[in-house]
Image 1 (cartoon, helix red, strand yellow):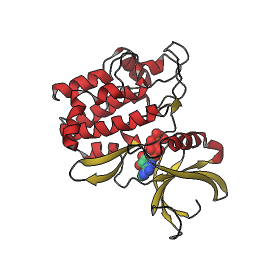
Image 2 (cartoon, protein in one colour):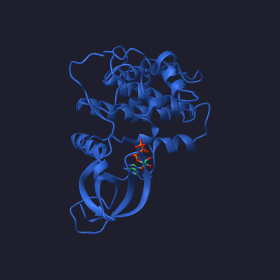
Image 3 (cartoon, protein in one colour):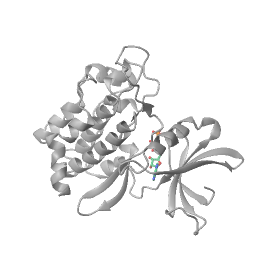
Image 4 (cartoon, helix red, strand yellow):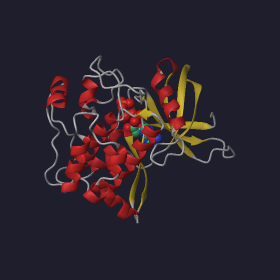
Length: 281
Ligand SMILES: Nc1ncnc2c1ncn2[C@@H]1O[C@H](COP(=O)(O)OP(=O)(O)OP(=O)(O)O)[C@@H](O)[C@H]1O
């Protein structure tokens, strides 16, 4: 993959940096002229290597960022692990939310329906390949292009916290999950049981959908202890000014018992999401 030249930093995460890179060799076989390259010191690249493993199983999913391969390079005398991804030209869902007017119906409900439908399709593909994403939140949802007749095209990204679905496991109380993503989007069971199931991503989806509607995170908290208490014993604030269908959809995502929380299949049949099928025609 050394036909790519890293031009500038797009962003950074706890793993390392993401660069915008252009193709050096115009005759190479890769169909893309630009890519996003996620980089980390080889010695600290375990989450990027996990991400490569997960993304390889999700090739072709329309709502998951596409992966072109990985390699190791010597950058400024540092052995660097590189992960080559399709480049999202329109930023993240977080950018879209903060650039919209915060408050009542931050994004119009019709738009939220279509965006949520795409997130559900992406999550369904992740679950069907045997993974749980474990870090769904607006900064980890990338926007690819604007198709005027239907709206924005979203894809899930940042699979560095993903976990294999443990077959036949039950939700037992034990060690707190070690690979939990951002606590503000994490479900109650992440604080009491030691492995994540598919229901983890549904709770995080609910937090993300609510944020699209209000412009704010579901929890108001002063510190981590406060946040943990809210997640365990509080109820996420569901906006009162959204439609009955939207409210019910959020209730189904925020069922505290992960075994009763709705699945992607059930949520795709929910009346809130059914509206997306009419929009798609
Ligand atoms: N494929 C991509 N195309 C365009 N920009 C990207 C791409 N992947 C990541 N970025 C940018 O790089 C930033 C950091 O990447 P990444 O999403 O992996 O980390 P993060 O979620 O922001 O941080 P953390 O790892 O702490 O959760 C993103 O917020 C986004 O702005």
